Image: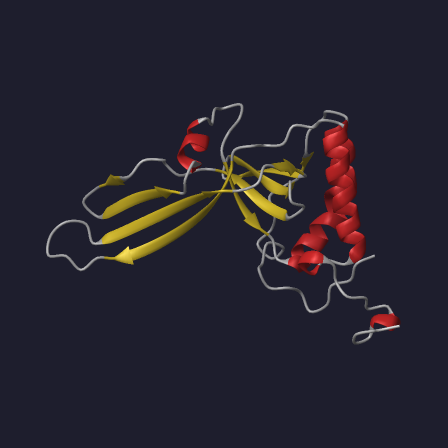
Length: 193
């Protein structure tokens, strides 16, 4: 038998994406349940990158903000919370990645004023998809979570959300995530049961 590191001591290698095997299996079961129950995912999903530049020009706006939108996989929301008045929360996309989503707060057109130029760029097909957004089917910006946070979200919300979504009740309502929990740095030690 070939072992790597301390695999025989209970520290088995993580599955795809740096997740423990139990978390990956739970997500695979969740995806299968959503497909079998025909739960509709949010299909207007994008990723947004923002660049801020200082332009050295003698006259006109000196600051430029460029937002680039790319298509992301449709997702099922696990949680929903009011984040600055817009729907936001955690979800699982069709590829099994755990994400943080927020309704798109940005305009889809370029604009300028005396101080700032805001430009918007779209990947191929993204602009047409985002223009389909309505009040009942909004566009969302999705960010993948780091593996340690994804495992926490799966452990905290996945089972309850799967039951709620499959029964037609929607995602779990939670309060806004405190800044300490939303941190991009992992805690000293994360345990998964």
